[in-house]
Length: 458
Ligand SMILES: *[C@@H]1O[C@H](CO)[C@@H](O)[C@H](O)[C@H]1NC(C)=O
Ligand SMILES: *[C@@H]1O[C@H](CO)[C@@H](O)[C@H](O)[C@H]1NC(C)=O
Ligand SMILES: [Zn+2]
Image 1 (tube, rainbow, N blue to C red):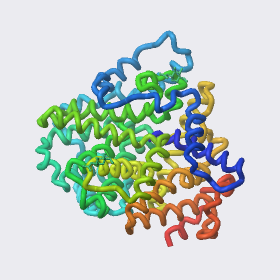
Image 2: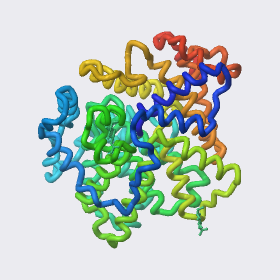
Image 3: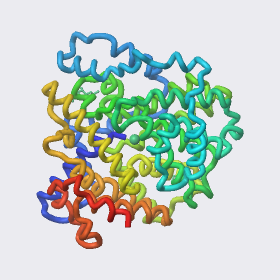
Image 4: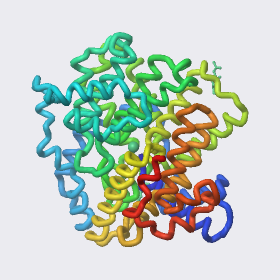
């Protein structure tokens, strides 16, 4: 997801709410104005067409990516060039891609760990699932192990007559193409989103109506939705003249890249090569539509549509385009569900994402670029970032999701969200009263070391 873009939104929304000294408005015209401000002179989204008919017009991106990065562009300013070098995905230099052709299993595990990991897999549907522990038990192979398990669990291998070797190779490539040096946008985040997606797929409204194809696409989209994420946000790519920004015309740059990277790996692995070409292309297109929905700068668009459906009560799960929309919303929820997890898990994600922001801020400072909102470690804290994010981005989304899927899981998620927010804003004692006006509280820079962690869980 374009997390940092989203965080920028948070900052702007907070500023506006402060200016008004009133309730936060989700008025759509306000938000539209905000997006335009946020994006600066970036092209307005509606001008862009990334419709499926253009699919396939981009060559396989991973290959281009490496070649382009290895060349010096004399037209680029020196600092932009050195920044690009920093982001040149150097892992490719030491790429283990050639290992993929070998027969070595992706994970050689201690028997004891295998046993414990297998045991954990029986609780994949639990909202308290500890993906950090699972990742350690699988020796860093949580994404491969979990996704393969879910494919097997749903019988997708038989249903789609998938070649198990190709499937495994595909998943290993996906996992490898996440950058393990990113504090947040790495394969563990993808595994976490896949696990959350599975929880949502199990919700009654979805489980009773989704087709096998929906499930396949939902899981694939979750596993690949941040593929090859560079660890910096879209505004950064634009201001450093990154070729991806030009390729995708400054619009959903990262999400388009994640999608096209996933398509590249699907084709390279031949996972769907036995399907009729038309079906394969249709899958790729739907996968794109799901991944592009994770562009957080478009959240308002999706939320407005979701609200309209909920108000009219006209979502018909027998209609495939409605199911697809619900899958988009489910993936959006899965992508930003960190604040809805139990505190111990949620806190770790918060620290990781902040580390990634601050790292971008440091690169910007080092290269005399303007420091992006929320990326300056001098003026932001984990708690202040989280509080705004929860209030303006996560709560509105999960409130609507709970309206759509009024279940125990939804109530659990909203419960953790309130607790975690109270924890970060240092207002636990006020829980249940006045938290909704907590924008000022977030400016008080809560001391994260003094959080009432014990009482969080009671
Ligand atoms: C993308 O944004 C940059 C910086 O604002 C601008 O120079 C460039 O022309 C834009 N590209 C497109 C295709 O809109
Ligand atoms: C499904 O929903 C879409 C969008 O609301 C609508 O255009 C289409 O006619 C519906 N299809 C069926 C078969 O009802
Ligand atoms: Zn993500």
